[in-house]
Image 1 (cartoon, rainbow, N blue to C red):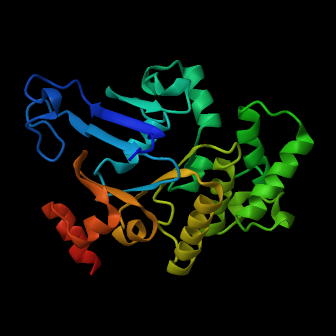
Image 2 (cartoon, rainbow, N blue to C red):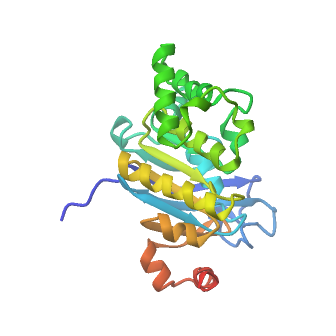
Length: 278
């Protein structure tokens, strides 16, 4: 049987705060991600995974586990200490994207990836109109025709259930759920291959959470886009993810099909998460 080629391949990603020392070299002998001798913090400790075309990969873990740091690293918001990541749609997956120039990394951010942050302030310009927020992403990718940008913004906002009549309104006047939907429309502006979603339902009412998650699932099915969705809530991961990584203290402690992890968790931390869900 032929297995599909991963659209994204990540190997041994390390994000360390501090110089490190011979004692913690290679991420060994850590205490909850921290070196007891030099006090360096290993926010990510040799994290590896694959993301396949059309797949939703879930990442779950408690606050401080490194899951959001991982998304920031993939989107070039956070510099990595070590590790390699390859995109099959960029130079046939032969170049480690962490070793690219800043210009090449901006190209990937603007053409191949989209990011939806937990806090909409990080992903939106609150004093720009909703349409202008989408246009900003289009301009970054080189589009200059104002009419085309307006039509694209209208299409995307309608697609995420924002009334076109509100295209000139600023996101600061929107509810939290609507702000997240504007973020999603902006992230999808240039038809990215990969969408990164960081705790997108945190702080939203349960009914709004359900609507946002339904929207994300519908978009994934319509666009066949690959997604990585981060959450501390295993119920969100259960609803959304095909496969799941469980992170603790900067490390992946368990990985597999979401159903398998829910039905037969192996690591004691995963067992605790699943038990809390029941």
